Image (tube, rainbow, N blue to C red; front, side, top):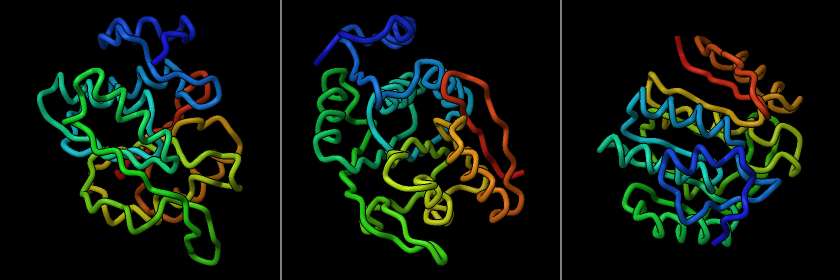
Length: 205
């Protein structure tokens, strides 16, 4: 476990009592401002069930919010076995393991419409319904529009008033993903939030 992380995360660590450090990696960990927004949405909306695509520091933040609310549970899909194990160790270090189920979900080729993507093994997907969906995986370098399958494959597992939070939303691929979702899901609305890597908030009106 490491305490080597940028100063921008210090306030987050103090707020949530992550005194032993955090799981931080330069190219993988969500930005501190995104994690702060994520926490605010959870604490204000008080979701009962949260589904997360991609585990890590965001998983700890979600779990700590559930602990403080006294309600809610997180299911986190992680394609990397070592990453899944690491997230579980961090959760245990902070006594948060009872709020989260980290599922090792290796990537498999899935068909969505006429296209094929590498995405989390459909056999591992939980049923829901989920009030909050956080999309921060699979990694963007794997394929074009890497995170597009989230809505087509998870739509029937989401609550009617679900909030979807997409990280890295300033990237061209994520902007294209949001455009496709808006076209394919009538009633879906979108708000872009300016921050370090951009964030998209989507919900059904």
